[in-house]
Amino acid sequence: MEEKVNVPDMGEGVETATVVGILVAVGDSVQADQGLIEMETEKAVAEMPSPRAGTVKAIHVEEGQEIEIGTLVVTLETAGEGAKAEKKPAPAKKKEEKPPAAEEEAEPRPEAQEQAPPPGKPRRQAPPAEEAPPRFDTGRSILEGVPAAPYVRRLAREVGVDLRRVSGSGEGGWITEQDVKAAARRGAAAAPGEAGDRDAYGPVRRERMARIRRAIAEKMHESHTQVARVTNIDDADVTDLEALRAEHRSDLEGIRLTMLPFVVRAVAAALKAHPLVNASLDMEAGQIVYKDYVNIGIAVDSDRGLIVPVLRGADRLSIAEIARAVDWLAGEVRSADFDLSLLRGGTFTITNLGSIGGQYATPVVNTPESAILLIGRGGPRPVVRDGQIVVRTLLPLSLSYDHRLIDGAEAARFLNDVVASLEDPGRLLLR
Image (cartoon, rainbow, N blue to C red; front, side, top):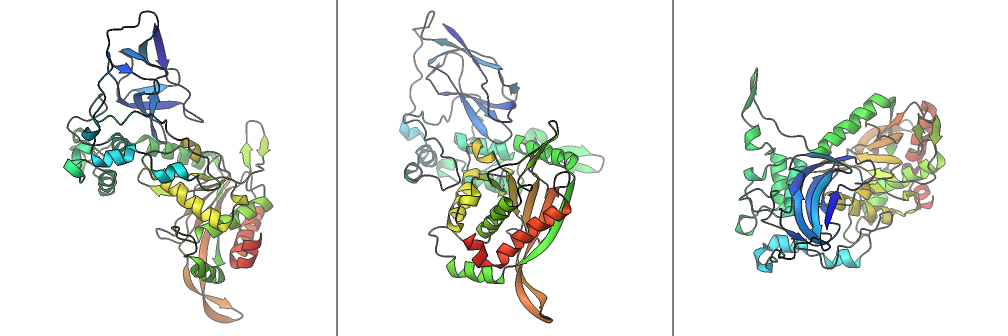
């Protein structure tokens, strides 16, 4: 019998996707949960699985096509009336045909099976026990003659790198994840057909905007046009805190203890004391929505762009738990694939400019949140204490907030509370 396979609900806030790969052909036999197409949404590339076993009777979409929820993708002939018994399953790929790098990626890491994610993170579902191996040379989604595993191709599409212009450093010339990231940093992104254009002044190069970059652009435009943004700037004297951090920076095995977990801890406590900063506006309903939970987004600079995973229940975590959780979140969103649930539910965002350079800026509020804190590069500065010029370690802080909801006085009180916690390590650890 025939079964129509349509695009399912793709999750909160995701209404459209682009078909970036077709993993089957007409006549193929497929198993339940086997990938039919690859879809690129605003945040990631994911496979759309087959709901059940059957034979592909028709494919109704093409690569590059924009699809919505409910779009007809594939027609299957399932094991009911009219099923084609003469169709034979496609022969399984031999294990030795996979390059070593791809085999390592396909096999779940032992530590990923044995260890739960740190506190504040949703548990990722384990892959099915009999998951089909990655497909390397079938389907129109694979560039002919380009030796790269599926997860590498997904990463290349997300960062806008044309694999035909990348030299592989893996065994047998296979293109690795590191090759794609290096190409992205060099700007080797335009496909051959996109180069060679000119404007009135000389040659230019055009490249397709990745969906994640388009989503970032739309989000920034939404914030700029809807939020009445104001920024308060201050410095925290973290001389004592920096000494404490330096003394214990080796206490967490495998985790480098930076200043960020201390700032997260201070912000979480301040959000509990100033619930308006943790709230959001519902203009259509004419309501202020107070959040009785503290979920802090941590902006992560990745090859795909700025991604903000969310540290949930940050007010209930210790400094050590925050440090481990932040390290885990950053590793997840910098990987080739991650769970979109990591990006949802934030009530406040922290972005760390200091790890790259720069002291102050006016960060853009991550709507529908109402405020964001930027951490600048800290360091020794001359300051006046008791009439004397002394050198202290100062940490620059820039708080942007939605003036429609938060008045300047409330923003100042919130930032004062954050600064006071950072300047008094004992208070920070005891709160």
